[in-house]
Image: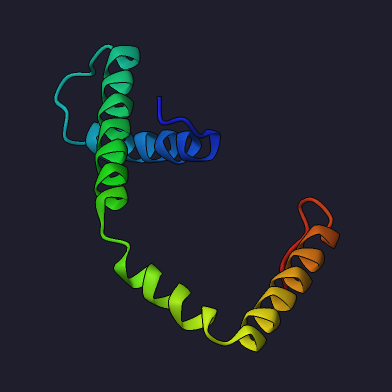
Length: 100
């Protein structure tokens, strides 16, 4: 529903946490499948609304940063080299290893 496995997993975790906390306030146990689906559906809709709001934010700040680095090619080169080195180190990490 949200278009991303990682975001979907976050929504499932949020759904289970919310259901866990709401269970103590319920006097009667609802039909769990429908109840959990409704919570997950509402959490996904909330996520999509927040995503739409973030995508509508002006890009003026991002454009200012890009303009600042465009005038100094040396800074751009250093930034690109740092990014390349960081990505190389990240790819060398074994799956499941700690970042310590």
